[in-house]
Image 1 (cartoon, rainbow, N blue to C red):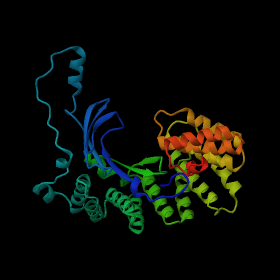
Image 2 (image 1 turned 45 degrees about the vertical axis):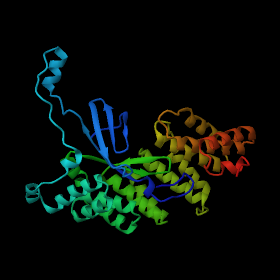
Image 3 (image 1 turned 60 degrees about the vertical axis):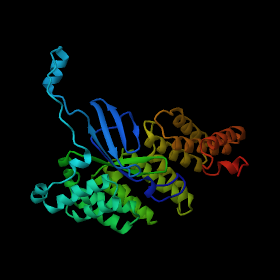
Image 4 (image 1 turned 135 degrees about the vertical axis):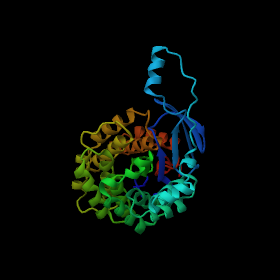
Length: 358
């Protein structure tokens, strides 16, 4: 999925792989290294700037339950030294005896993780492809092939990952590593997917869409929607694809398709970037059905919350509201919105032309 809400772009600029052991927390740092402060103490993160892959470790090791109890009771703290943490790349570096004891496919998997951490994506992909019977390796090989725009191999490896069934994700769990793929659903919204059947299917849908096979992409997405009708990422993906077909003139019944988008977005509340994106698609469907006041209300609700929202997404919502104001004949309000869009992103859609600046 990888479009500017209104047109498709290649996935490569937005696809990244994140290795971490924790959730999202405030962080400070420089490209390639940062310090993050979370509920369980500070963590250090290292990676290659621009690679999108990071490996995170909690600093200072784990405190024991007994140690926490002593601290709570005011007891004297032990003077025992803290465990020294290895650098992430050192943890993934196999020694001579490790390689003697480890099956070759697992060796390739670990070497692939380390190669990507060191900034060599092509070498990482080669290692993952050699670990051919590891579902996790197939998953990573598939997404790296997708990043390389090698759609045939991406489909092959993602299907191999799906064949792994419940085994998908097990090897990473054994290593104590959490991996996330940031998959662009739009240029302004990226979904976090993990090594699991859902993540593999979302990747397959992207492969089909990049090939221009919208029917195959929809088929995959509909399977996911049947499995979990509340999955907002899947709902956004289906709505985006349906509206793309309508606006490109490829849909034989645009009104029915827009009504389907309304069904998909029914009851949506502004809880996250994904929900806000779904509200944008709902408003576009309403505008297409000439329900302009309803579209305006949806957009106004979506724009009330700006904290924790992606700025590109907010600009897209504002641009859509400008179009709705225009359709309602409220030209002054429409121009005001176009001016704000232009101030935020001068090259967003045709805002400059509409203001006579193009």
